[in-house]
Length: 252
Picture: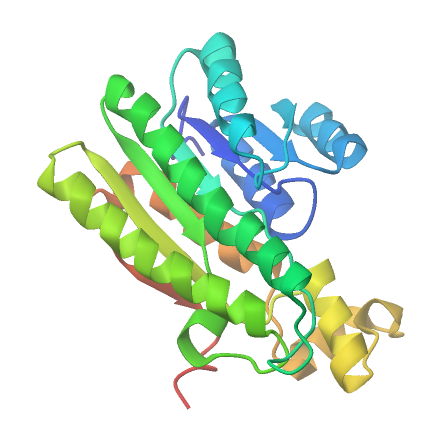
């Protein structure tokens, strides 16, 4: 308990999936949280459940980031961590991806991550440092044909993270920036992909947990443990790294 005691952390896309798991675990370890999401009812419910603040946000809207930082300062007076977790996954390959899908995906993932990092660094400099975590994917490492725009965006997040990490190190800002690359984790997005691409409705199985284990699919907490570590001072010597959480799937 208390590995991130009193650290002020923003988590985007926190209403469900990985974001919700991150929020619960960070809060259990003592963090003060600001949760953001476009799903306001679910976000507010989770914030009330765990004792966090909630801010409705579409990360692809630039102005929302300044408003979020003002809310953070007014609520807690500082910022120590940012988890750029918000994301979308639209199934479409190189032949079927529309311009609208491409731009929407880039807006949420690349624009949102860029604006989030830029805004957070301003506050973290005043707070004496911090930790930024950008949620990428194994799709950034190997590419997934059925997720063309998603793979491209996650690859961009991977390289953006390294550039930010080097900048913060060179400028001696005391700010670390790392990317996290989950493989198949039991979240609504993965459930949708399994049902659409391979015909497996995981939540509808007689024993979803047994089926999850048989398919080698991880749990959201497998990622949340890494998030706590990267926010905590235990990872003070780690920046510019890509943390792969995929049970070895990208090794073979």
